[in-house]
Image (cartoon, rainbow, N blue to C red):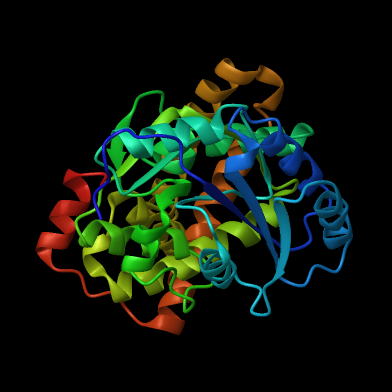
Length: 345
């Protein structure tokens, strides 16, 4: 599973799962086509989950112009199934997962392939530069690139190369993915982390590098953000129930905060003083993080940032508790908890 020394450029298969991505898929494909990797060594597989907008028509227009682009069908619609279809169909020795919701730097493919060939990593990935297109989405982008908004998810903000527990999307040798059985289709969300955990358990290491960069377009409203992060928290429970040792400290904070906040609010009729302690402490931390983010990115975003941070934390936390109703309670050992606070991978 460990990689070979630097060698000649390999054939690369790019896998793009899609579902209703008509606003982004053309820009995504154009950014890939502008990459400096030789096109005679590329194939692009768009795996569509039954889009009801214009996604498939847009992709077909590219298929007609570029012989190395193919449109495949994903009957199950979920990303794990799309990736497995792509892995089976791929003719490349190297596989790169690309989100349809992102635009890629012109050296994205080359940097990914070069790192995979040169370092002892089973997977490499890079910086997801969160991007908005208006006041609300810009505020969301600022919040999720803050440590207060994303914990130690390095791929959202780090500027140094380091070993991590997971990355955004990823680049692997095809044989590596086949050796661990591909993606687990029992996971509707969090399938990337589940795969990367199995990869690390099999002895592989995951490298994050800021040399690999893409622009990721965030949700455009707080409501859409809340749905997204509820799902993240909900499906994280399945991962932790199945793999308790995969626990990381950042995964404990939102559910504990949500529980503490709701409990505190329920205490207010009984003891006003006791009930406002947690809300005041959280409000102070939220305000400090919002001030720091606004100072870095623009003071005009300060009015909305506290609401965005609260949406991130509460949605993930409530999703987590809801997930325990569905999947059960994770059983952590003291070793798991200690490791969660000791390491980020």
